[in-house]
Image 1: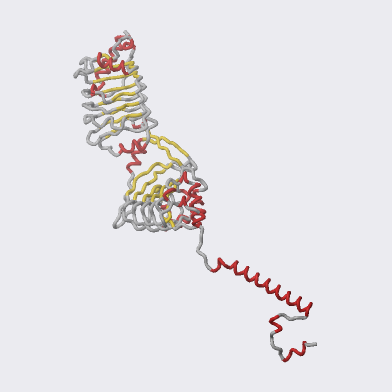
Image 2 (image 1 turned 45 degrees about the vertical axis):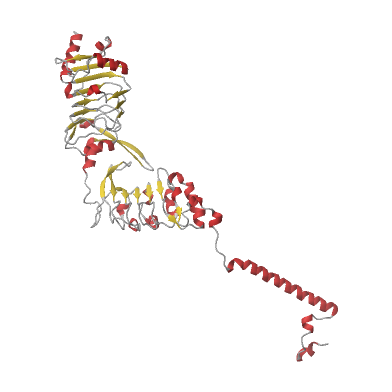
Length: 469
């Protein structure tokens, strides 16, 4: 009775296999047979393979089961412990449905081709699927990748195909992988939405958090529009999009914004940014000043600031800006900086370098003794957080700052003040010589009565009689 019931379940299940339903046949009958694949169902179009433990058994089962026969339309594989599942086998090309469930397969390699309309790879311990595994399936209507350990979804050509997708139960799935598909909601429908989550990981210099985000939240994230607040002007239009969920302990979850104003021929920073802007890119413009950073509150939440290839000549505005303490990445490469006042950066970055980076390469500085003594040491000390420290140059001769020779740089042109010590020494010497001469003349006069030669040759004056005895 039990055997008859088992056969009945197999027959019913395989008749509906084209819908990608997940059924769980008892596989004891396969353990007693050499061929691990056998045909089932009234139309004999379905091939069921169970207990596949090696590539040899799988290949032998496909052969003895008659998979190469063109009338095989459905293949159901369960209890497989293969290391990987090969999608590029020619045997799959003429199938309509392919199911791999209740297995310990970790990877899907290769690329499916042919007429497959339904693929079920659920509950198979999958961690990796070839990115282009489903790219050549123009007839694909249903794909089930649920209950696996996938971190990144493969690429799907969903436009115009109206695919039904099940990715529920993948608790390691990264949100950015899912968000790229959410935009195709007119051609793609998700099933088991209540158990579909993705993982978002955000790092802060004081707090680390990893959280599960529901499919509804990702859809909301992708649906938020920022056209109204996105910076724009008469001759430029910045691009604003969602960046990530900001997870801060003790605060509500917010959506941070990424603003891209690169290559817009801007001559100054945008006057205002959308709320919760965390990432600002103004690279490849003609910006000369960072002064708007001083008091504009909309800049206060920025953690990544990119301003490469501009004409910025000073970073002193950073000292008085509201966002300097929150910066994680600061990039001002290839600008017109002539000096780098490191006290501005040291006040913030030297207190906590964890996860922070500064890029200053390509700037040509006016190198002096202070550059060789202070800036060079600062670059070398913090080189792990200044990836382009070797590219900070001196304007003269384009010498690297880290190669400056202090003994050569710290030399000043001489003027008359450099000889002051020689002049003082000569004056002291002459004074001592004069004192010695006077003392000698006095001694001669007292002992012999002779006056010094200059005094004896001087003519007498009318008043000299007063001193004669």
